[in-house]
Length: 236
Image (tube, rainbow, N blue to C red; front, side, top):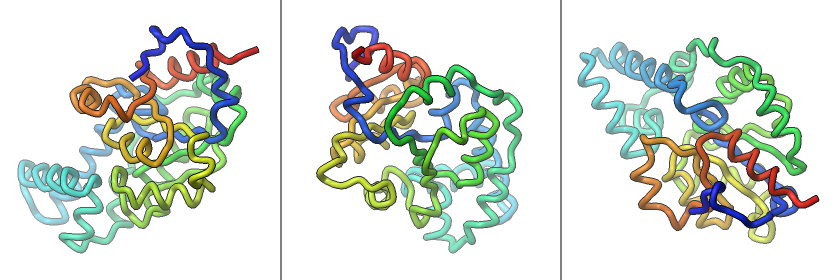
């Protein structure tokens, strides 16, 4: 795992990578804002009401589905035959008013010469709302969402294979791609497919990241510090 503060190599990242692929929640915006916890709370509320459960049982079901399938919705679809559309509409109906236009991030993204994409377990609508709030929606050419993945979530390898196809990645060019993600286990399949990876540091995933060090190439406290360091080392 390379920590940029200790990395003295001068790498031209714009020359190294043609495809820059970003997770959305807790990656594009600061993990410490806790915004995704609102989505999680909406999931619990939906499960509680839909299945007529108490709070504890609803949360237990939610967590069990996430652990087993990598996405709560995926588990509910398989085991409970739930309709995904009402679920997604409800859980993503949250307020992200804290997300202001991020000029610094927009400037950094503008310095990237390669193709920029979002790869998320959420919906296109959710991604669009967040990116527009931050003033960076136009920076991304493709948003690959959970519907594109047929509701198969990261870290399931099949999700990555569908993402690869849509983004035009193959065995000959995948080494020219880099994937940014806050959930450490989601970096393992990307690395095994030949992508470089960057982990957004957070205490929630730190133990997991330590166990997956071989699959993580770069780390940083947040997306802006990582991109700033990458572009700072650009050869001139």
